[in-house]
Length: 83
Image (cartoon, rainbow, N blue to C red):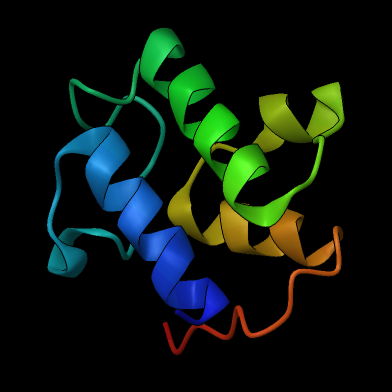
């Protein structure tokens, strides 16, 4: 599974949205993306990509697109997004 697909799967599973809803998805824009859901998603990403995110990055992870930008800092390749 490529990294963008893995990222998308984690976002969809964490927030109970479909792939069409990912573009523009933001913190607290769906009920599931609250503080608990946020930390669950972070834990899933850290496990899937074998990284430990900095606290500032966890706080700044405020949208689907921002998440891609942040993960690139951890040398996660193939996170190209056409949005």
